[in-house]
Image 1 (cartoon, one colour):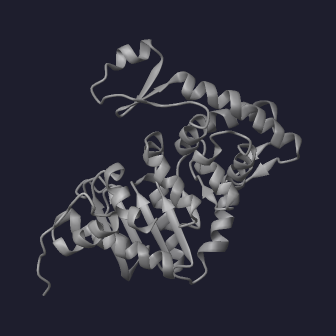
Image 2 (spheres, helix red, strand yellow):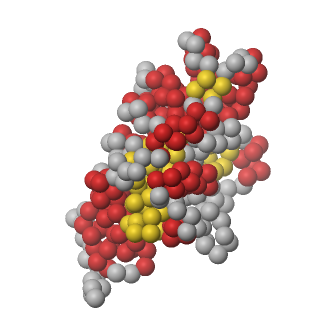
Image 3 (spheres, one colour):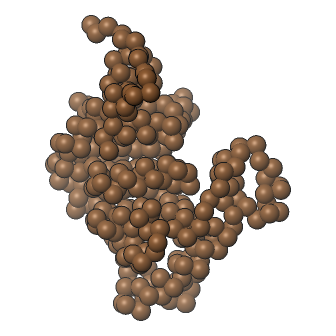
Amino acid sequence: MRKVEDLSVTKGTSLADLGVQYYAAGGFVAKKVGAAIQILEEMFRESKLSILSFPAAVVSTGTRGLIKDLIRQKKFSMVMTTCGTLDHDFSRVWKDYYHGSFEDDDIALHKRKIHRLGNVQIPISSHGEIIEEKLQPMLQDMYDKGLRSMGTHEFIWELGKRLDGEPRKEESLIYWCWKHQIPMIIPGITDGTFGLNLLLFMQDHKDFRVDVWKDEFYLMERMFDKVKTGALMIGGGISKHHTIWWSQFKDGLDYAVYITTAPEWDGSLSGARLREGISWNKVQPNAKEVTIEGDATVLLPLVVGPLL
């Protein structure tokens, strides 16, 4: 038996020190954070394939910078996310998002042409308008260069290449995925402003395609190798499911950390704890895994900060 140890935090306590103390504290979510740090540390050292999975909402916040650093430092060899990640990451290369409140008057915001995402305010000019203005010429350039059919990860590399001259390029997840040739796979590419812009472009360019099946063939090549595989999954939805779905063909994840705010009792994928994945062959029975309950914008710096 290991005794519970009291926390001792001062102005000089580092994130690494805090992570060790969280595990030693022995209780509740703090211990889970400490366990996650240990799992990820071993995963980065031992796994041959490491996957970072997250939904779009966090990319509208400052947490985008932390995710960008994980990609920039090549901590992960694959990214699985949603179409909205492209929307937010791409538009923020040129435009800013702003502080808001969960209690904002949505009718008043609508009149002012401002979207609300939780407590983040996004002017229409910082989202749909700038995406169309910047993306459509890039699509035309791809088409003119003979690029007519790409998987989502290939498409994102082409986008990253075209961000190379922008002053704020290094803030972008898209840019760093291209720079390090890390595949960012988006199985739900149609579900967002990017998807709409692709549809508009394809109306006049009938032979242009962003083909999700190319991603599936790419995953087929990568996910049948019996190598140690790990994943850090933030939130649920299609990005989490695609990560664990393909992991079953490796006989499940060897390492897994999951951050979620969803309850388990409603039967949702977002609420499903990692141990449920064992019954589906998506997580190995002897995997090193932990599910952490809480807000990723708070927890992620504590979990990955000591490892950056």
